[in-house]
Amino acid sequence: MVNSVKFNYNNKNTISGGIFREILFYITLIVIFVRRYSILILSEDSPVLSIMPKLFYLSAVLLLIIFLLKKNYNKFEIIFLAISGVLYVLTKEGSILFIALLASAISGIEDSKVTKIYMIITAVFVIACMIFSCFYPELTQAGAASYRLVDNQYVLRDTFGFGNPNTMYIVALPILTGYIFLRYDSYNWIDRIVLFATTIFIYIITMSRTGFMTMIFGLFFVEILKFCEKTSKKTLKKIILEVSKFTPLILTAISVLIAKIFASNVLFNKMLSSRPKFWNKYISENGSLFTLFGNKFDASIKSTFPLDSSYIYIVAVMGLIALVLFVVIYYFGIDIFVKENNYKYIAIAMIFLIYSFAENIIFEVAFNFTIIILIKHLIDIDKNRFSIKDLLSRR
Image (cartoon, rainbow, N blue to C red):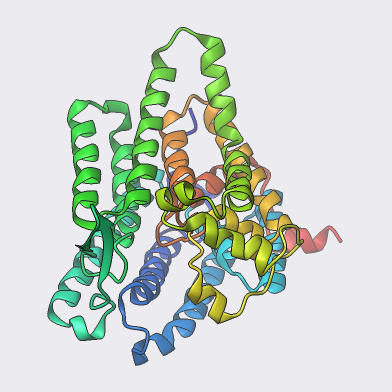
């Protein structure tokens, strides 16, 4: 089984920086959360939003400091960071670069610890946002009412203080996924009741249909993995686990096909809250499907047509190079977990992959901690480490 690496301060081969790097990681994570949740909750005309770009660069600088304090690296780490940097320069999308730096930053920190930190910080920020919206609604997006047509009547959808009813599922996802990760080995019917009840409760309040469906599919896949652990049907088990490696590619293909074929289909648009129609705007009407480094869309298109799909986002905005990198990273990451029978890692990765079908969150580091852990394991495979000084001396 793939074990998390723990800090050992008495070992001269320990990754440098130790406790200081870990503290810096926590500080950086808080900065990232402050920026992301401010964008989620504050009204669009809030003057506070003007400092959000500064927080982006502050978190980037902190991550670079953590990276340099590490001092010892391997080839995969350097190559992945270099590719991420190039993609940032060419696409102006810094999400993959942040993921690369965060994955490097948590090398040496237990996966369970990273998961707990994400759960705690998420819970604190969610509660703080709810309280803030309650007392200062005029400063937030909570005042924007949202309705759903039910039995020919418009019914008000609660947002839990956020601007969009769908947001509650997104911010709850790290907590629910973290709960599954920590409880997986002892996963029982009480855990199932807690998770399904929470999912249903959020749906009753927000009426977020796609969030509910994708979360249910994610929980259903956890049951499939539990079945794989116990079944004696090796062929079926192998097929399920092999398919899981190709999930990013499969869901990308499905998303593109839906956008291309069912953009005008009433049933699909009703079921997916107009997503097929909006997806089509990005890969057909206002952009091209096949570009190396993505299309450029002006602000009016982005505001008029919400891009609620991680897979369409990667294809349309980031391009084929990013898509290939994304598919390859997930394939080899899940392959590690499959070979080691590490099902809880597969479970949390798959939940985010499934949920990302209907929301653009796969590269959102304030939510998707699973991709950071997955890449960390890819980094930790290669034990041949070197310093920058070693690298320069070889030239």
